Length: 183
Ligand SMILES: Cc1cc2nc3c(=O)[nH]c(=O)nc-3n(C[C@H](O)[C@H](O)[C@H](O)COP(=O)(O)O)c2cc1C
Image (tube, rainbow, N blue to C red; front, side, top):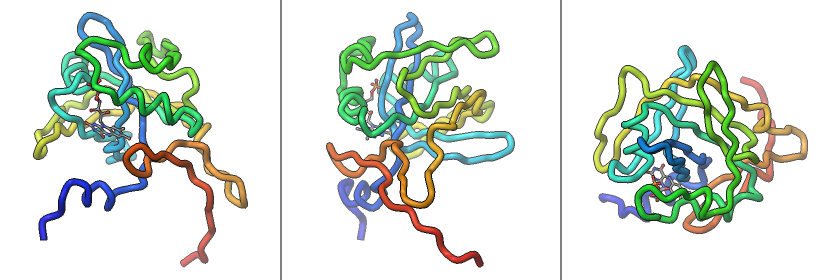
């Protein structure tokens, strides 16, 4: 039986969610949440992100060739969700959500990310570029730079504060971990 969209979503949730920062050709910052982000290669480090092709993020990534992905703490759930609001093209979701952004210069290039990110990566569209996959655009990207100390999961009790997308309008973070026997 062919699944409905809502069934497909439930099948994949809960899942991590990132804030994707990109820049419009006129230099304006854009921020949007994306959960269809996947690590696809360790060496070289590469990810894919699947984007709606008519949205600002996809258009900016195609125009500029770079973007950042950030993990943020659960405490930023409301602000992350506000960044998904479809604003008129060119309007800055970070301003709308009152989400402070820091631009960090690494290797001569400034990379934007939410000030409260607990981990982030600067990504450059790979030579393999993009592929239209159904109703989305799959962007293949090289991880140029990464700071990820903040997302380390605490074993034995404590949890990770990195936000998870649970369902429409519901977010969470990792509460329980358990070690299995080695094989
Ligand atoms: C939790 C969550 C996860 C999302 N994941 C994706 C995704 O992986 N890909 C995508 O194209 N849109 C995703 N969206 C929808 C975009 O964030 C939304 O369409 C947004 O308006 C795009 O903004 P933009 O026009 O600034 O790019 C997600 C939304 C939410 C709330």
